[in-house]
Amino acid sequence: MPSVSKTWVFAADLEGLTDVGDSAITPSWSATDGNPAGSIEWLGTGTALSERARGPALTWETLFGVPAGATVISAQVTGWDELVWSLGGASARRVRMRLVTGSGVHIHDGGGGELIDETAAPTHTDGTPDAKGAGSVRTIDAGFQASSTQVKLEIIVSWTGTSSGFDIEQDNIAIQVVYSQPGPIAFDPLPFIPKGRNF
Image 1 (cartoon, rainbow, N blue to C red):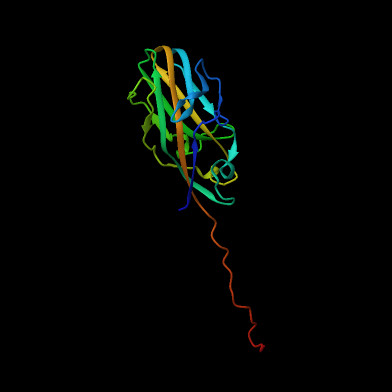
Image 2 (cartoon, one colour):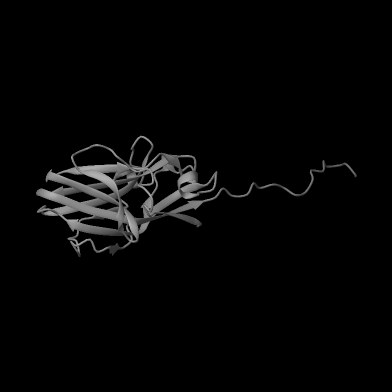
């Protein structure tokens, strides 16, 4: 099946992602960090906090370039980078990515599957970019497969324990979308000739 991809590179800004306002964690744009420069950065202090950032509500057509009239089948994060500067004493951090509707409804695998759910201990804590692998292929729920459906990227960052200075970033989030196109309209190329009539 055909596919299209979009990559959030954050070269000049957050590409429309905004803070949902769940907690004291603050997502912001870093102009200097990234791979190359430009990333979404999460800063905060506190105990067991979680925060979301969401992009603007755009259709599959506008956000990913899915053709009008197509049916979106699945989505997958094919790669992303993480930069960890400090967990600030937190015992673990978790990074999740998903696609949601304009109103925030989770739209794949019945609302239960994440495109990314990263809990592994960071490889570096000095800001070195770590290339992360692909996430799981997630099936888009039937009610959200039309190319005209409004969708958003949602990133969720959280930690367990208490942090005195949490600072991590993401960059180059690549998402591939697989879709099917409507089939051709069948027609009979032969003219209808009534029985018993000569032409």
